[in-house]
Amino acid sequence: MLAAVQSTEVAQEHEHHRSLCPFGAEAATRPGVVGQGEVAERSQIHVRHTTHVTVPPAPTGRASSDVVPGRADEAAGESRAANAGRRLAFVTGASRGIGKQIAIALAANGHDVVITARTVNEGDHIDERSGLALPGSLATTADACEHHGAAVMPLPMDLLDDASVDNACRLTLELWGPPDVIVNNAIYQGEGTASRFLDTPMDALEKTFHGNVLAQYRIIKRFVPAMIDNGGGAIVNVVSAAGMIDPPAPVGEGGWSLAYGTSKGALCRATGTLALELGPVGVRVFGLEPGLVYTERMLAVHGEEFRAAAGGTGTTPDVIGRLCAWLVSDPAAAHFVGKNVHAQPLAAKLEMI
Figure (cartoon, rainbow, N blue to C red):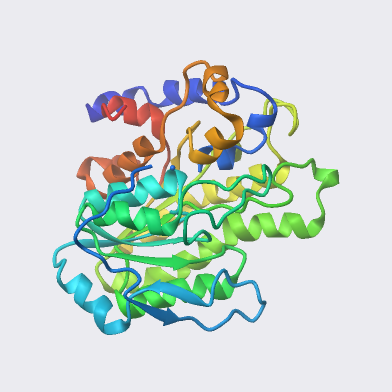
């Protein structure tokens, strides 16, 4: 099966690029949100809300929260000790969409999970563009992961807040140790991601690169030394085809913004370089390009007509979650180390769709 995947890779990539924007202009302006989901079950393992771990306020005043719902040091150690043999994954942007389903798939695949996002509880987050309260939260994702026997540490984190990012990494290392898997899924979703270059202020350009590139590099740098000391692991950066090809039209007319495309392009280019540098010390690096994915945000904002306009293309977030779990756990995925993987063609070949 893997040989068939490899032999058709180039043709599928070309066809995938041709079908990136089969729908209206508004929907195509922010592929990062489109590509960047809905099970909430309760289990017998509860590692959340038993106590509070206090996090120092960020000096910028932009911390998502001063309190992390989770366990104190002793309780956290006990929860992971009870799960001896399970690996540890750190997943960003896990309150909904692809990040949520990646966390659930990794939990089902034998990982305990540290999950981060800005939305701690249901109803906390109002979408910046639509004004809608989107479904999804760290609490809901944690419930779903616990259903698979995973210990879960939910941590509020804001990509634009370096102190918030540092605190999430520090708490992970101090309470549970280095992750075996890092999934950089979260993206910046504010000003500049849907505007033309001349209409985008410089501070919005800086925020876009901070949230889509520098925060991911920061997380990698915080964790990788400890990962190496622990025997290695895997990094999955969720990338976008917007960082690989030119848009079919200007933003607002079926394309994406320069800020978004160039920031995701930077993360795409990191895949091969990081793989070359970190591979010899036991860290595998993948880029995961999800394509058109029907997330909660997309369906809440655009409705089911969006799916119809796409002409049957695209998939659901759980497919991307299962493929991510395959990449970090199956020996056959070694072929894709150092590559930006187009998720949907590969998932189809692996009969995950």
